[in-house]
Amino acid sequence: MATQRFGLLKFKGIEQTVVGDDIQVGQKAPEFTIQKNDWSMSKGLKETRQKVRIIAAIPSLDTSVCDRETRRFNLEAAGLGKEIAILVISMDLPAAQKRWCGAAGVDQVLTFSDVVKADFGKKYGTLMKEVRLLRRAVFVVNKKGIVTYVAYMPSTSDEPDYAEVLAAAKKALEN
Image (cartoon, rainbow, N blue to C red; front, side, top):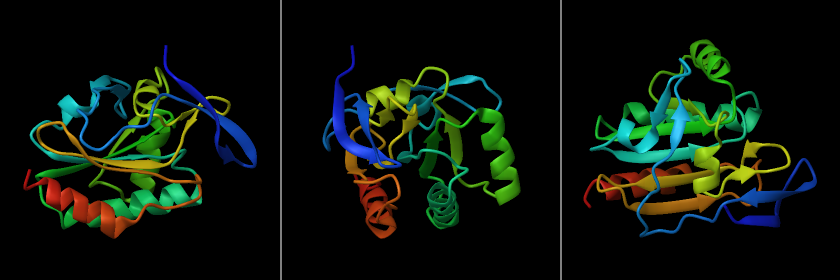
């Protein structure tokens, strides 16, 4: 059974129980099962093997901060090259993600849903139990499957340090 930690953060002013332990730099990244935009199940790390992965956990694409973050990563992805994959994972339904990406012109990042099993959320310590959304976090996983960067945002309204994340991804290409 996954660890449950209450009071780690608030969502809309309400204390949340976070399910799962925080990921640590240096550990092997846990494989996770998620849904593609066509509802098919996928293994997130296997899907992007042989690449450095930036994995962004967000509450919902239909919020201003998540919208901004995903659009920003989409813009940055174009300049990163094919050796780096950016995965954006939320609890949004796959059909909603597909619709949002089409409307937003987002085509460089891969969006995935954790709505069916919450497998990613539990394994990466991002599942907020009460609202069944993911807390905002960013991970960089190198080609060998080792976590080289972790940032859990103190609030779901805080954006990641994009320059820091991109620098970590570029550095992970060397490992």
